[in-house]
Length: 247
Ligand code: MF3
Ligand code: CO
Image (cartoon, rainbow, N blue to C red; front, top):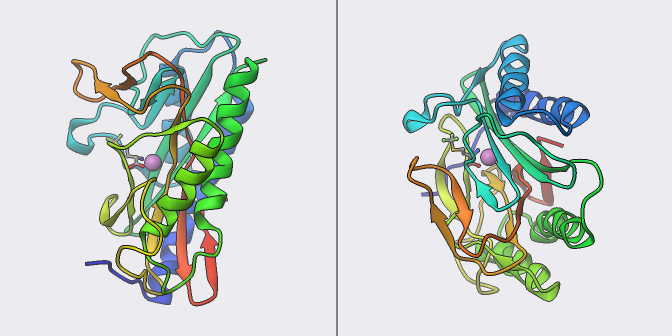
């Protein structure tokens, strides 16, 4: 069941989403070579707490941190630790904030200094995939049109779409219906109702799309060891378009 939110609920959602947006910008201004992924997580924890919100990821099914910090071949759910960021890395930071009874969710992939042209393209195309995915999106759009558009843009640029993770609905829970895949067939899936709130989050790879989970049970890495990128926003579907709450 795809839930819909009242205007009052959407107004309550705005604040955690603003905190996610501002926290991602704050991290983006500080992340640099020499920093550990654990230090990135501390920035996120402190920022969210100072904003009067809670880091939704911390303790979620036992997840041990406030952010997922995923370097290069790690696609998502990188657990912050002593890994040191180096010039040329790409690092996705994914975080959720809980306030007013609602969760906001967003992710960016940051470049550490100068990155190779292929990583540069990967990061750029992944962001573009988000905007392609929501192009023309409004109440009544078939759900899998989003993934269809993401997939066309990624594969049209010689990149591949991760299959085993998807976007999702969000609200009082961090993950609600529906799942929002980044691949699909045009014109299929349930039609999205006005005032449903979803996270659109392309996860795109330079090589193949196959992923494996490390023994920690979380860290998702590309099987071929090639880089992946991630870009995510929380979006309200409206009668005439979308409202992006984390931009
Ligand atoms: N923010 C992630 C998402 O987009 C969820 C992180 S999983 C967690 O779905 F365990 F870290 F919380
Ligand atoms: Co997220």
